[in-house]
Image (cartoon, rainbow, N blue to C red; front, side, top):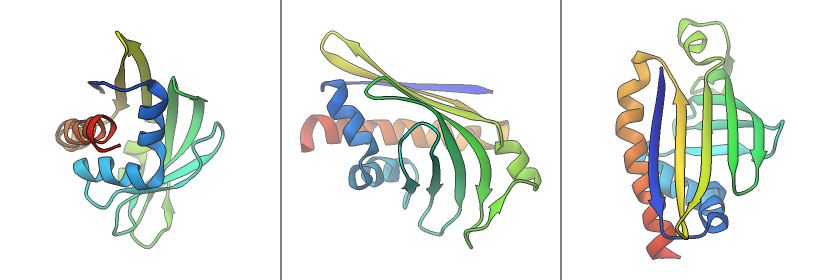
Length: 147
């Protein structure tokens, strides 16, 4: 299933993009949806990024597209266990592998609309429906009020 989340932020795309991707601010906004979240890797086309929790588990994705200030498209290619090992064979991993995650940054009346599109299974639907609105609200707060 595909889930879509949107928020409008009173800031330019460049500021929203940078706030979303810089390690310190990433941890702040992502932590509002998934406490302890961070990433390891580069936000560049063809690069692999590990999205992990403070316990070490998470997912591994490859960036299929990265157009600065406009779009990021990631494909999940493995699940990461708490010990750091990559899993491509378990049933949980098979549910993640091949799913896409897209971030779009659109300008609307001098504001930036952030659109997050996620392919997922019913098993993870509630987690995303709870986490993304909180994470995007925090991103908006950081972009508009904190910096």
